[in-house]
Image (cartoon, rainbow over all chains, first blue to last red; front, side):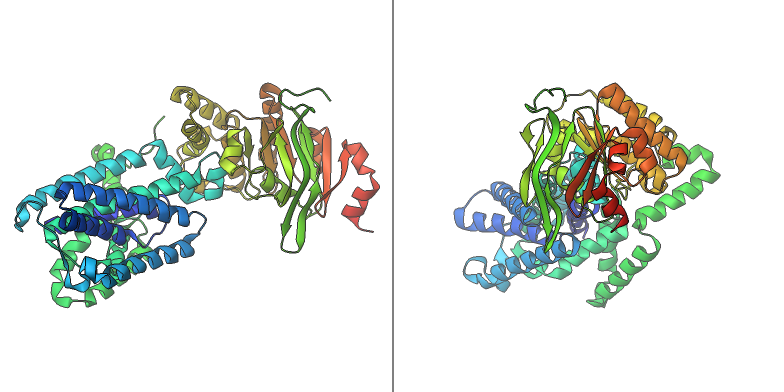
Length: 293
Length: 252
């Protein structure tokens, strides 16, 4: 469960870069995880490449497809982009399901264990390292000038363009980058689970990522991390509820979107602000960071 | 007209046969517009005469259906907006388009950061220095850590202007209704900024406005559009008595 939480942390961080910071509400993020996983498993099975090489090639392929999908969506606004990416996600899922001669479809494709064992401990440390890497990478991007381009594009794409930002270039870049996050997570996850199926390519999986980021705090740095762990733990605790959990999560999203648009992070921040106002000594620790000059 | 470096015929900005259609409507109709370097030119005309469409064509947000746009002699009508900005064209919008979730200071830094992406090498200290100077000039420096969406309408206009002046190099500044709905004090600040940047840095301005008093103070020459066409051009006195202008504004 811990390894899986961390897997979702990586997915959520990647999607937050695209949807949160850049405003590109893609619904194909889970597909890039599957592209990473299937590419690696297929290459390992058919071409006998080492697992790490398979994962690396899956990431490269996902980045290339992400770049292509980003290019396709360059001129699309909100709802059309969501629809186009959703259609792409469904097409890939159907392709994997139908081409069972190669992918084994719903029967499932075997992916050899990375550490030669299904025991979860080594994978937990692996995903902890990957999640930390994803956080650092996302932080480096958001904190750089690229982060400024992304936020400018999200706030007003036309204004960004006439202020000199190459909006096409950076939207493509973020599409490809978020695909890399997903494919890294998906590639390793495949060689941890040992069996791939088209089920996690269903929309439910994407919905989970959306729920995690929104409940955690869209467009905040800690949001996807908090949200992914919170929702995954909640999901496990409520396992007995089955599909009814999605209803609960949907309600949670509605409540958060209505009352706390900044999600859990927003709640923590207001609590921190409340505390800082009463205990001035804590203020430097709790005050939100803003660009200094 | 004195000769301008880079433009053989002396104009900083020149359009020929510039045309933009929206379905059956010809919003800009074979527009010949020529603005000299260092000019502060007014662009006036009744509502719907094609002024904003012209600004959108010049800044690359719209693609012309016919005709050409030259900046310092170079064709720019097939370039994308950020490429036009890279050649020294900045603009403001009638309804301010700011980066609302970024601070005031971050807003003015965006053009400079975009310049780094084009291979610019200005040191950050110099960028910050100019940003602070411009913010001080438009009276927004004390608000530099506020989010742009928290500004009033007039302050938003001032921020758009400061942000545009961060574009480097800057040859031409297009302003779409900079005085619309702003407080008289802010109007004065905007006029001062235009005159100062024109005087000190030689920035050329093309100002779309309905504020005749402001334009009279700023612009030795104005161009008049009506139904997408250029119908008159000249000093205020000249166009005030121009038959076609009176007809366009007052009707037959």
